[in-house]
Length: 100
Image 1 (cartoon, one colour):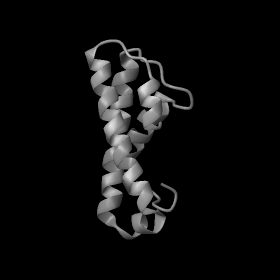
Image 2: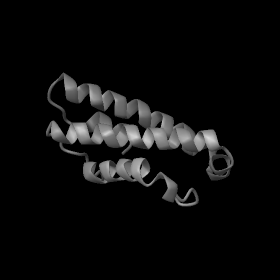
Image 3: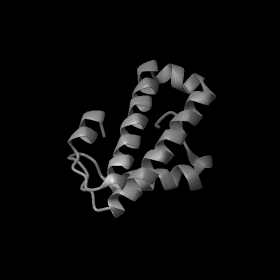
């Protein structure tokens, strides 16, 4: 999900709006990580941990926002974000950095 997709996503109520603001901020941080490039990411354990943290937060926010009934924007699947979060949390020892 891009920050522009978050801006277009319709929401009802302050809880959904708060989650969407969090998502937008986290996606901006993800963009910062991506801009550094693959080599920088693979060489920096702290950057990898930051990426994991952001993916977990995004997955939890997706879970909350889907329960509020907010429809995902085109190209986004809330359930997939939640599944990604669960994988990172429960199968952290199986993460393959070359494909994440």
